[in-house]
Length: 114
Length: 112
Image (tube, rainbow over the protein chains, first blue to last red):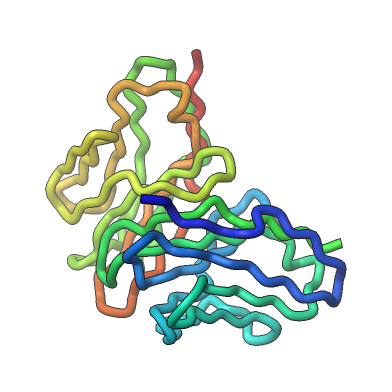
């Protein structure tokens, strides 16, 4: 059973461009979580999605960031007009349902904004 | 969710037991204690969790004090592959509250 997949693993964008990060959850998992990790810091929760629904976006910046998890295909975290402060590692996790103790994390996408 | 306090770093000799403490003095009755680890910038990995009883699995043991204000993660026979940042997380298991709140963790270094 393949684990959580994220692509690309590394992404370089110039200031003002758009970044699209993809996350394919584990097979049979319908819950996806996005976290961001700035250098030398712990992970910070961004958003929790189920298929076609955003359940908790309390950690998402109010502007430029959006997330979706369509009925078919991977979850997408989209960052518009990137700035240098967006440079970070973005991790996706998945679980088969809510209220389960274990979230399975992907390898992350490292975004660098130049 | 309650706040946790962990030492920033620890060393442990290979083959010895690694004991990682966590303070969560403001924990409430329905909050669970979780441990995750992150090996060299990889995605975090779940280790163990518990409410008030001690727990053991193939990776580790979790000892929670009777008043639940602190806990200890024990890696019984540490190997070099256990070098990682270990996060203690406290979370209420309510519907919709699925997020994990990571602090800065303890950077554990296993010494050969």
